[in-house]
Length: 237
Image (cartoon, rainbow, N blue to C red; front, side, top):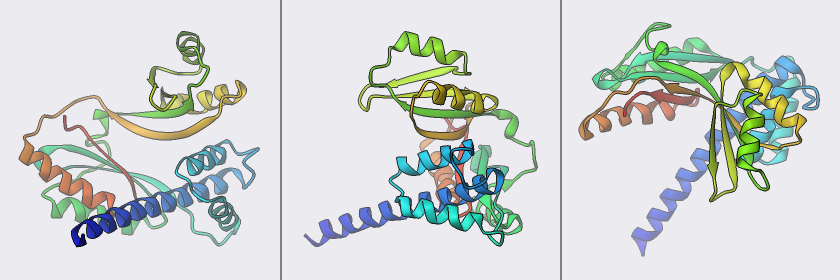
């Protein structure tokens, strides 16, 4: 019974830790959106997207409202989006996406994570050419016709469509340059956006052994535990 309790407790703590990190990231996203376009989501398309993402992970409305209010304060820290490039163990290209109010601190921490796991932080352009920036839109697929919907959304930049029948959702992939075009197209059609995420998709693949995969996972886990890190991308098969 004791072991079962410990396992459940560990799972619960892990879930709360993941939720807390998601809320922290969304708080930074809200701050950046408000600084750029103001606190009114009706006139700030970027803020609308962040609020939708907050709903998708069950972030309480009071937390969202508080984050918007804090971001409206002129003394609030300014956050920046930073991309760091490097090679992980066994020469695996790695991109690290961060949101930070102190780039000096963040780059020092990212470099330390790479060094401790037999990797090396690189320079701008050292591995980014092996990745493409994309945007994923998740919408409800209830009552949508597959063929007609895809045909219509191609005009707004849709290039790949994944229909998830189990959850009645459609995931639309667009080039990063079509982000605003797709958002406006969906909103004009009164299609609610459940969640939006910016991702990097690898254009090459590197095969690793099971042991090498474990080495890479240690670096990824270390990076993802860093509060400034939003996401980690690599090209391991």
